Length: 278
Image 1 (cartoon, rainbow, N blue to C red):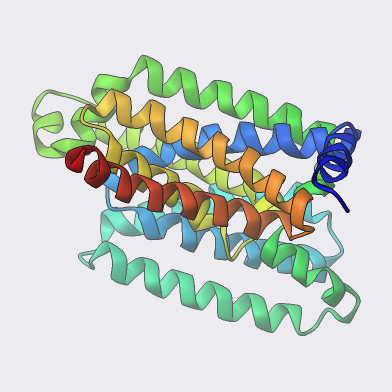
Image 2 (cartoon, one colour):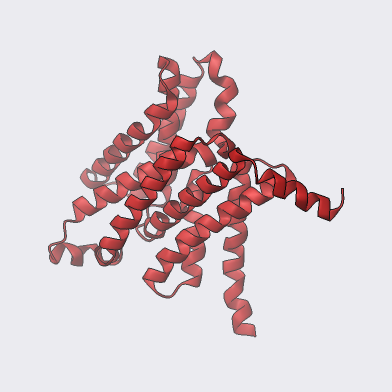
């Protein structure tokens, strides 16, 4: 097959409605994930999205076992679980990474045990673990768009407060900022973003979806506001590039998006050195 015919084939593929929905879903969730991820890594909550993703698998497992709609259970379970984790982080003296490791491993263990009792759903386990962005529906797009709008309004209207909480929380408390309210709102939005992105990326890869674009942005940005905008942009760009790789090379969509994120991260590592040498 010639290069020109391959380009035509890919162009025709992107004309299909399910492919257009997949790309739009990737852009919306990429923007939201990158935006919140810029704060997540600076607040040393990178492992939180991973723990949240595996807790979502636990919620999905119980939904399947009880015969409920997994999609309807996923988002409420993720929010409740995130609030529970936040409560434990505030009430215990354990290090954040230690507590999240306990939650991560125990949630995964319980989920695997629960799934072992569901013979009829084992075929869908691969989709839960690695995602299937091509299965995104119009209702998912609407929710993703509303969620992105909510994240943009929250970050945009409280940017200075979020920066203060992120960079110097004791000073924010001294200034009278309601740190608990802002932290809880942020965690709920992050839980919803992780929950909606699991369908596209899967449980095992969801942490990369939040963390990698933000880390790449941090390497390239000197100002906090630029870091937030660039992180969101890289999240959207990696989704489009990943979908292009998936269509071109017939690869799984979720891992392809993460590989695109990795490529952008490596480029962000190399770029400053190249610019200094030139």
